[in-house]
Amino acid sequence: MSVPVFRSYIRRKDMDTVLNCLVTDSVGPGEYLDRFLKSAREELGFDYGFAVRSPYIALDLALDALALQENDVVAVPALAPSYYLRVLEERRLRPVFLDAKAETGMADLESLESLEPRPKSLILFESLGLMHDPDFVRSLGIQVIEDISQSLGAYVGETRSGSLGQLGILGLEHGGLVTAGGGAIVFAHARREGSVLRNLAGATARELLMTDYNAALGLAQFRDMESSIARRREYAALFAQSLARTRHRLLSQPNEGEAGYWAFPVSLASGMKDVQAYAKKKEVDTEPAFAGSIAAEGLLPEGLCPVARSLVMRCILFPLHQRIGTANAQKISKVLATLP
Image (cartoon, rainbow, N blue to C red):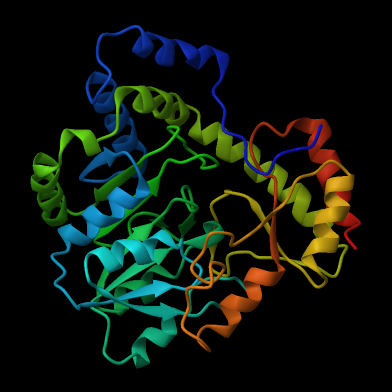
């Protein structure tokens, strides 16, 4: 049986949380959602946050909280999810695209300084779990929405992911370090933005809020987050040693700190199809690293962001989830060490 790139799970001993929710009379937002948000707040350290039914809704609410006006310019990484553009289009905001850095796939934030007109806000999608230099992000002097859906648990120095911007988003979809079977949290670390979010939450339709069913699953996942990260860290170290024997390269965080262990991203020196076919033959699944991104979906204006376009064609993900197990970890390690 092939090892999947992503595998959402729940431990047997955590099933009681979900089953207890299933037998209640409440289906919509309620007690379990409150408990889930309390757990999230303890883990992420935010002042206030609330959970909705999709990352799409979370981004829309975050833009609302920043009080952006029609035709305001918003900077977006070319390797961010393509749904970002649909949200911006609905709000009649003007996107400008940031190319990626070839060594890491991270957004080229330095280019912001020369953009005209200057963006009013930046949606900082931390792709592949890699986190930017906090001091540089803060020096930009613009509003930041930090999307930590892939960088949960990452840090640089004393700064943890989720604390770089005025607002943060944590997607809870399949494949995340924490999943609720769908949904997202929008949150703020500072009291000022937290007050704005409180008002926004009160005005948000109940039908857009996360249900107790999803929250019960997310609650069980948060309880296991630290051990999950520790196990993924061990696998990542093993896989990095194996990959180092090849001509291919790990996309890793350049700053002093630690990336989020969302998946194991590899920049290939050969064709993606050949590598995927080889791994599949050895029963290891892979996925293009930037599938579903703005660049991958062909949504960039002609001629823009050449580095991002190149990375789409040559970056691939290998499994890194906590359910891999010893035998499969050795299997993946051998595949990485012998990639064509």
